[in-house]
Image: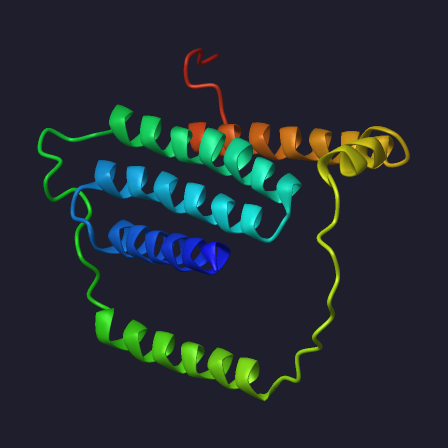
Length: 170
């Protein structure tokens, strides 16, 4: 019974924080609410006995993405942050899309025959996944890291304009 109450509490926190991200007019508040959303999702992963996903959610999303968003917003802020996140004019059209998408997902959930399997929750998954990533799949893991580094360097070059602006040769 406690896990059901924890689920509903975490789900309410995630939904409220996600709504705050969208509807807040202050961009800094939206970025901080994004961090709250990520923490709530990590809590849901813990309830599902997915400790590795919860750790990745906290470390990667909350620890890196949300902090970078907050720092980026604070470094680029304007004088008045009260209305730094203006409303979008496509609200009604997006509401129709959201309602149709929600109806489709609800229909899929209600018409699917979900198998009920009584299994004990798995043991510690983080150690097993870490052993695979650093053992059998180490080369693929490192290749993905190099690919992400190359993508980040490319994004920085594109953001700077593609040429070295500091030194012009004639």
